[in-house]
Length: 383
Ligand SMILES: Cc1cc2nc3c(=O)[nH]c(=O)nc-3n(C[C@H](O)[C@H](O)[C@H](O)COP(=O)(O)OP(=O)(O)OC[C@H]3O[C@@H](n4cnc5c(N)ncnc54)[C@H](O)[C@@H]3O)c2cc1C
Image (cartoon, rainbow, N blue to C red; front, side, top):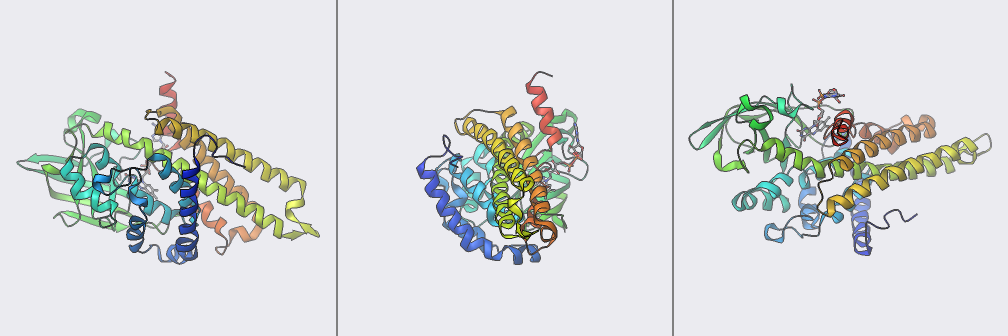
């Protein structure tokens, strides 16, 4: 089935073959050990940089290849098949949330100081919005940045931050004018090593285990004003703008992971014998697999529709929210059904389905929950 028809051209499919080779040879054989260790080697960032994977949508002036969103879409889909949501997320955070805002809103000096080394795999970036008391409610965040001369003095905490332990800098959402609500949010680049910036703890998780997820603390942390991204008090709109690609990339990752899940369910049920025949021969199993393939195809087409709009430069807010919600929820359903089709084997760590099932569950939560996606869609409908 050529499901990418109409979105991806031959050059994208050629790139897909390259990524697939890298995933098969350099990630798949090792992901179980990395999941067990709850981290993957830092050298992978350098390797991905060498391959040009960290700068696909970034200008050549900063070390990118300017290849565009469609190439990165392919990367998201194929990376999701590596067998570890954590490895995929830890690497993808580097070329999405960890660098996207600098590319979109940074000055030339900020791009040279942070974006270029991140594209080269020399610096790891993170994006810190969520707080212990504010997740979906971005406007309700409480971390403050008070201006003192040429510095902002930052106080507060962030949680669930991907790459928070190992990052060299975090793009931090702060309140520069707390009294102004969502119009008082700004984005600051805070470097690791700045006094008052500490990693409070590395968090234990249901899934995405190979990625590092941290709670970060800021106490009288002095950040130079030159590290402000874009205009002061414009952070809420910058965060919303940045969400577009983050959500689309989560939808694309869900589509890629679901492809892997379906393939594994088909392989397992063809090989597994019960009552003297392959499990895949039972009518109920064939129909279950057919329904899973249909579910995947619906989500894929909606995701590709949003992708086409995004790649054409449209701000497709509703379509992106729909794709994110539909694709990530579809992936959870497929992982659950595939686990059932595996029987007891699906519950065992030696099969990838168990990990897919745990990893998929983050999809409808991270980058804005399904409930928040519904809110966005409803607002776009004028409700
Ligand atoms: C593994 C992992 C990695 C993450 N990485 C990052 C990262 O790198 N950077 C970062 O900033 N954040 C990150 N997050 C945080 C993630 O984006 C948030 O968890 C998510 O936005 C939801 O926020 P919350 O957890 O505070 O849930 P809450 O906002 O507390 O929501 C709890 C429940 O209430 C519902 N709810 C809330 N408001 C409404 C509403 N208005 N209408 C209806 N329902 C509502 C939610 O949908 C949810 O079901 C990560 C989270 C995880 C688990």
